[in-house]
Length: 301
Image (cartoon, rainbow, N blue to C red):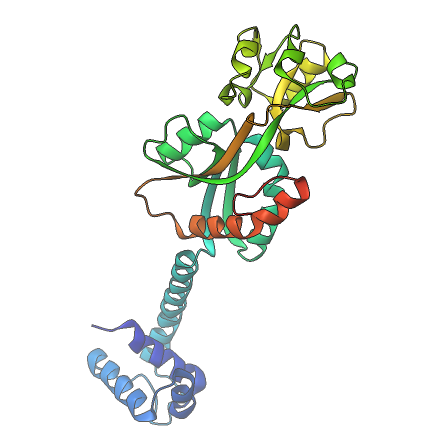
């Protein structure tokens, strides 16, 4: 059986036109090269070179050379691709993230990761925390970045950062004029618009307030539009309040237990794809810089 490395030796000798240069290129001795060529000719039952000088091919030699070049190049390309995938430098990467992280953190983190890995393909979903956990659990995405799942069965959750909730209202709302952190009692009488982030709040003072809500909005753009239209106030984590329109105000809460915990969600007992593992390392390494610019707390600080 003709082996691939035998074809590599033959094509290298044919390309260089002599054994000495081919041996140097392959890092082998001239005698080993000569032995390999002889074994190939013995197996094929005919000469590959017109003479011992190895500078001219026979008809069989030209035929074998033409076919072997493609086989050797294809093999080398395949090996290179395998190494790139195994080292996390290529392959598909699917991420599900809550919108605030997708819009305000990932744009600062992904470009440098992609610059070092031009052959990767990233697919990013922005959705609520419950859906992020479900997508990770089902294997639809490699990893998720979201709030702590209500149920962590089958999932790993690693805290990345936390941010406090803020009251979001129109700039003309009386709450925006108070000028001090708001107590839950200050919100009495204000209609509440629930959203996917606020429904996860466990702060004791929040529950009575939330029970009065008659409107729930899932999309942040629509949520802000409803707030602007005077349908009520809402609560959003700090990261989700970056770059709000001028006619929307944010107010601090006095209750500092009103906090969202955001973490990296992965599947338990599943070895991640190399590119997913590489992104996780990149995320942990670079996240603190981005959090610092936004005034958020990194758990390791």
